[in-house]
Length: 147
Image (cartoon, rainbow, N blue to C red; front, side):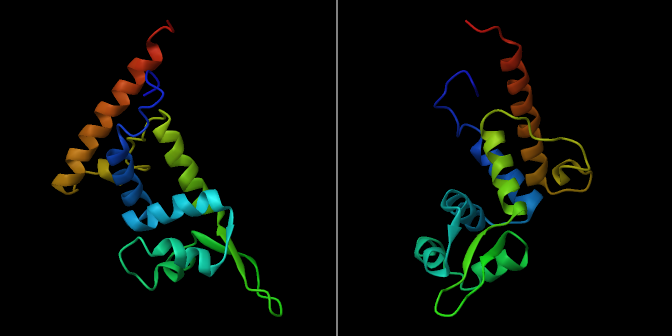
């Protein structure tokens, strides 16, 4: 992945599937958290504004908050509305995905990746094969001397 600096998204589908399973999030949740990660702080209006491009889910904000991906930064004070941010859990997830896009291997141990358990769906088996292949490509690229 490091051979071409513009080749970040080659394995995005694999990384995305890994994230969806590991963190139990939907594609829309993931996309929203990538947006919020760069916003740092946001209010419900900013969240709702970006939500308009996603499939309708009126409970997305509350679901992300309940699952610990969003936390309150400043409570409502008088006429000032509350301000939110991604929690440590949400920020670590997004940081981890950026690292994977930059060439960090996806874990293949049973304790860190449920796709490598024995009794998983056919789709998970296909993805874990792709993860193994992707990790091998990453290892080979690290071994190559710089030109």
